[in-house]
Length: 307
View 1 (tube, rainbow, N blue to C red):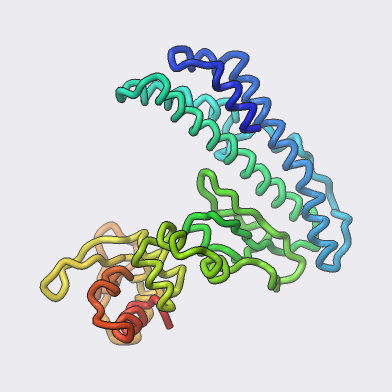
View 2 (spheres, rainbow, N blue to C red; view 1 turned 180 degrees about the vertical axis):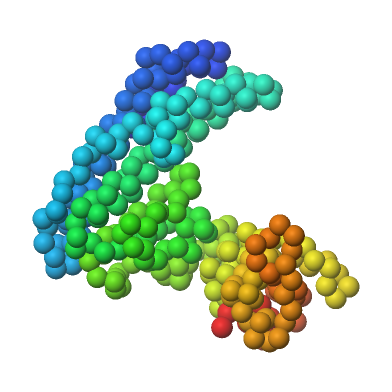
């Protein structure tokens, strides 16, 4: 599918990209993506039935999936044609920014490939989830992450969800699901297993140098990754240190620890929950200011990254 898109893209130009995508070339790209969506949707029910049979169940669902119902739809629920026209807008913006026609078209092709791949991956996941609904034996699913993957996906590896619970994903996410007949599934890759299989360079790329080192010291992978969502700076002990607001509510991991220690909480205007008045250090700051390995582990434990 991507090879066909590249071939069609080579026949277009930056000057005529809008009309090209509104014409035969654009229609051919849409048709290629629809064909990909149909292929994955048609295989969804067999995939779920096979998983149930492998776990000791039967391979007979209570209802049949209609593959055509998943074709021609973008991940956001809108028309696929609208999504696949967006690269034309991207090309125009690049030209306006001063790029050459060739540079703008290279960027546009990358956009198109991302939209096409995401659309097909999303169809695979949504059709599989519908197939799970059609099979009463299936009560849950496990998220399966294949390397290379981003940090946000790695921390979700092996997580189990109700068969009806939505799948968290981002553009270009290629994570998949394994339908579950029983709650326990020992064969999936957990965040720890995935991280252990990565090279040192790959861990630094995904988690950052300090994050990778903190994980190597025993820090919880989820806490290291999630902490960066609320990263900020605070002035502590006479210097500026990087801190995070992640997990600092009363119910958060760090917040619960501070609550048990008698720490204070205050509500920030515009925030729903009260947050700890004691800032939470980022892993890289802990590694930067700690004296030795013992001190690193002490601080990582204090700020909720290890237990």
